[in-house]
Image (cartoon, rainbow, N blue to C red; front, side):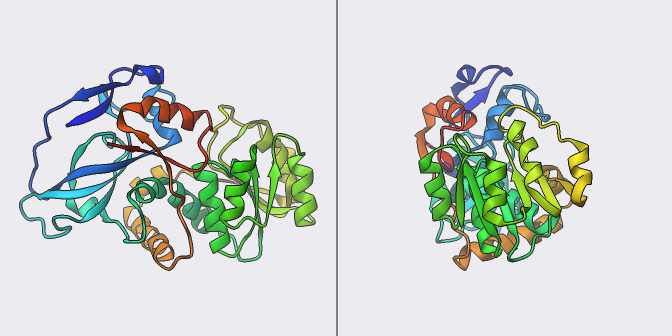
Length: 323
């Protein structure tokens, strides 16, 4: 099998494509021929040593993988041979073959392509966990989504619309704003030319009920001021590379709140509760209420370029490696 290997925490162009022996299959596991591997912003941070989690070196990058079950370990009755399955492993996904515990794979809904299935879980579960479990937003409320053209932001637009929220999408390019409109945003703001705070308050009236921020930096600091009474600033991440310095007086004023979202860490502590949320999200997909975007495809050997494009926010929507 072939794999994208991080031999040391270094720039993305130091990733190596290696030929490796096929992994042994243990009881309770399935062997999967990989057909698509999702490329996420966090993957780029991990291989450069810029994330809080630093796996032992060397390791195979990639945390979301879709493929076809080709072999069953002893005792496995589900899934079955030929099933399309999704593996959310954290690491090991940028490979042409994987073995994984059978009870931890998810059979892919029929309406999703391999690319959609390999790129929806992290972004859509982050959005669903944030908007439903953490923020408890209600139909009719105003949601301002920063970085709405990227995978995490676009998922929040789609999930927010499905939950009955009035979504304002912020993005820097026309194609990203058009993508957000296609996923149900009621209005868009050009972050490169417009005053986001002023426009958000103008569109929503007295201000928005929540800001969904995967970007951070100065824009996050400004958009805190776009919140109305009892509004929530939802901290998702810092794609800009800068952690915002939120002024505490602006939190105090009008009884605003700051809500942190770390879905990945929460999953580890609450696996049963997470499974319930995953089932709810899958039901929404099957009912046609949310629509994961078809990702931009990269050849397997172009993993470093795919990660760089994701990190530099050149990708509209999501990206996927195709072996």
